[in-house]
Amino acid sequence: MRTIACIFVTLLGCGESGSRPDAPLGVDAGPIECGTSGSAVVTGSVDGETIDPITRVIQSSANGAFPGILIDEAGVGCSGGMLDDFFLIATCKNALAPGVFQLGGGLGDCPTMDSPAAGSFVENVNGMGASFSALSGNLMIDSIDAGCAKGSFSADFVNGQHLEGVFAAIACP
Image 1 (cartoon, rainbow, N blue to C red):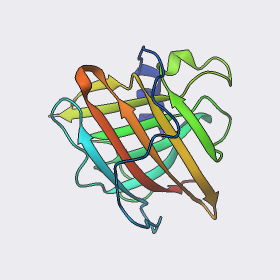
Image 2: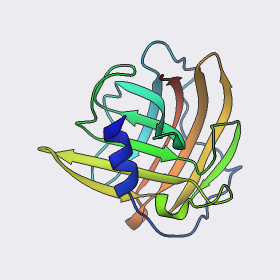
Image 3: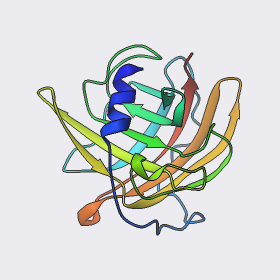
Image 4: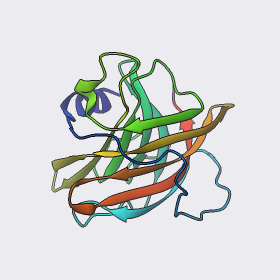
């Protein structure tokens, strides 16, 4: 959790929210389930990198603030560090809840509960990370029950780069 908190603090972004919340998602994954490590299908790339293979999808937060979804290539379930590429979507709310959260801005733009959500792709190469903040997009939480949050996302980055996907994220203690 300490690693996640450090990453939350260092991720900054800018831009305007501009994606339509009702835009159809291009990913056709069929039903996905949480299981023991969560699951997701993600298409697109940032800086030529994809999130593949996906090894865990968890509900995450930084010291109880900025709850969100972590889609990761490292770790299993609620354990393990983030040593590979991952995508983190954080809300500015107190808790994840069904609804649409517009992406735009970094965590520094989350001083109020009416601020937009933030999305950041982190690319790790030989232990060195590069962070890319989503300029616009949406996090859509469809349902949360029995420790599993299901939904989808669409995130736009600089130079026309794009990630979108569906997820089933487990809750970690």
